[in-house]
Amino acid sequence: MAVDTTIALITLAEAKSFLKITTTSEDSIVGDLINECSVWINTYCGRKLIYPAVPYTEYYDGNGTSQLFLKNWPIITVTSLYMDYLRAWTADTAIDLTADVQTDLESGILTLWNNQSLYGQGVGNVRVIYTAGYTHNSNVPYDLKLACKKLAAWKYFQDYSQRRYGVASESTGERQVNYSDEPLLPDVKQILNRYRRLGAQ
Image (cartoon, rainbow, N blue to C red; front, side):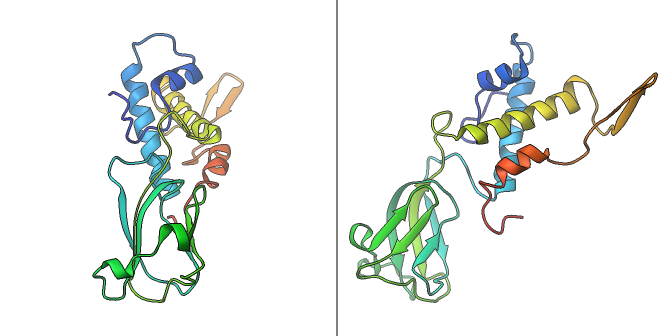
């Protein structure tokens, strides 16, 4: 399968270079692994890491503080921010993004200041429209790319190339080799935990 650039964290060329594959005969399986591992990483992190073509429209409960933590980051643009207890989202409930909001692009935090100080407590009374995520193969952090490469390589050798799916260990004469049956390699997990959304399952 072709690499799906709407979700993939690495390119086919990057994965093949990491796997030291120089032919095109396994492009389909490597493409599948890239897509599958990218989706798995998104699920583990609890957010979409590659920015979508359509902006996010999200609703939040006002928490009585000055900060709003968006579900996806890094922020690319914020189109609008409203605080409206009636949820009519009329012009008079729009928050001035220039004068009253400090935007932390990397962390995905919208902090109120000046004329707006708090997100008033309520249920679904805050609406934000924004775009966020990494541009495919452009600004995906190197450590995140590495995590995807390592996960794809692990799946390739464990499940495909050497057919060790479900095998915990094997012996050849006096030599015994044990394989990790953990769902996630420790070094990959360590990287991904830095990108995981708080509360992700």
